[in-house]
Image (cartoon, rainbow, N blue to C red; front, top):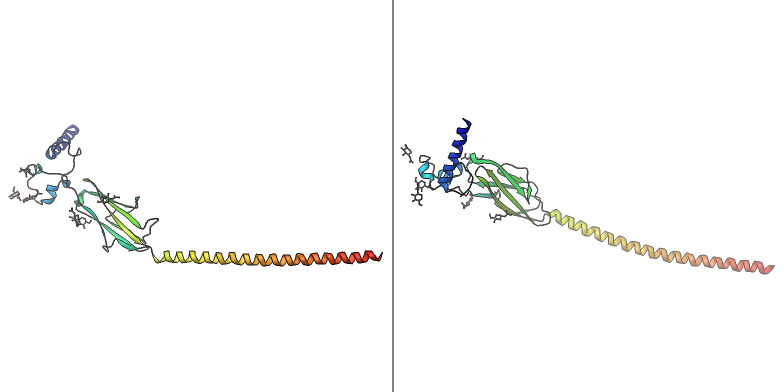
Length: 206
Ligand SMILES: *[C@@H]1O[C@H](CO)[C@@H](O)[C@H](O)[C@H]1NC(C)=O
Ligand SMILES: *[C@@H]1O[C@H](CO)[C@@H](O)[C@H](O)[C@H]1NC(C)=O
Ligand SMILES: *[C@@H]1O[C@H](CO)[C@@H](O)[C@H](O)[C@H]1NC(C)=O
Ligand SMILES: *[C@@H]1O[C@H](CO)[C@@H](O)[C@H](O)[C@H]1NC(C)=O
Ligand SMILES: *[C@@H]1O[C@H](CO)[C@@H](O)[C@H](O)[C@H]1NC(C)=O
Ligand SMILES: *[C@@H]1O[C@H](CO)[C@@H](O)[C@H](O)[C@H]1NC(C)=O
């Protein structure tokens, strides 16, 4: 029974390959992936039509909900993976953002509060994993620096200015301190001299 099944499977695959030309694809793809059976709803004719069948080159595109590919930093972006694959053939969707795999596995992917790292754009890829193969598409979203970036820049500028003022203030007070200590030194020297002269006067009594 098992042997019969295996023989049947091998035969079916072999016929598939014959239909599409041997060596064209190496793997046995299901009927859902053949373009003739998709574009023509009438599944009446089978083997006679399959003669000219090829695996469809499915079309996948990413659509932005707002049709915009330039957004402000911090806004939410909703993307949909538009495809013409038969629903039954789909295993899962895989989304990548800047080459990092995301958790989303449905055809809609939402980026909450979009941010960029070094570059000003963000590359999103949608992969459709299906029994017909993996088909993908990508989209580049340009992100305008948000207003909080300006706030950060202003803060950095203000901090630098404050630091500068502090440094200048320190310098001034240091110099003032020096002047004062010099004055004190001079005073002390004078005091010492006074004592000396007093001692001298005292000793001269003897
Ligand atoms: C689909 O069927 C129509 C006739 O029903 C035929 O003219 C057409 O060529 C077929 N398309 C494909 C892709 O086989
Ligand atoms: C499908 O097959 C039936 C019966 O075999 C036939 O009457 C019908 O015309 C066929 N349809 C097409 C589109 O070939
Ligand atoms: C397959 O394609 C060839 C050449 O393009 C054509 O002559 C033949 O009629 C086609 N067969 C079918 C079943 O459509
Ligand atoms: C792919 O799909 C998109 C959206 O449905 C469409 O605009 C585009 O023309 C299609 N491209 C091809 C080659 O079929
Ligand atoms: C395929 O699935 C999508 C979403 O799950 C649904 O909107 C669509 O109607 C389905 N298409 C068919 C032909 O079943
Ligand atoms: C994005 O898609 C285009 C056109 O489909 C392709 O040429 C390009 O290699 C893709 N880029 C990446 C990074 O996948």
